[in-house]
Image 1 (cartoon, rainbow, N blue to C red):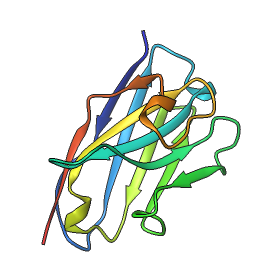
Image 2 (cartoon, rainbow, N blue to C red):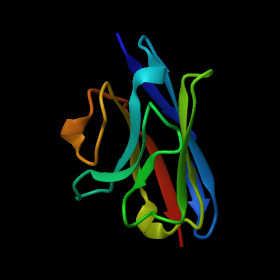
Image 3 (cartoon, rainbow, N blue to C red):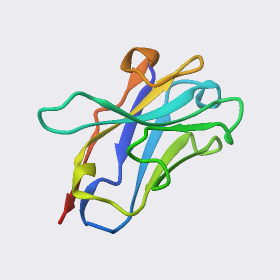
Length: 124
């Protein structure tokens, strides 16, 4: 059974940085496209970033985080990261890690496995 566990959430001031981690177990991490999504209260889940399994240089970002967030992966540790810089109050959300056995994408339905999420709160 594939399990994804996010960590690194918490409270941060606007303009600050935070790094989220997602550890994957029970599957073949190196063959998964990995993604990050977020959901703020009262809003739909939003695509944040994705990184392919065939090339760590192949990354995709949602428009609202481009230039501020960076996704990366460490196949030796079965972990994907989300480095978040220049955080804004509107980045406040529960952040979810997701894995896909194929090419992933920007929609919830593109992913096969999900973590339970970690809360990130950005204070103004």
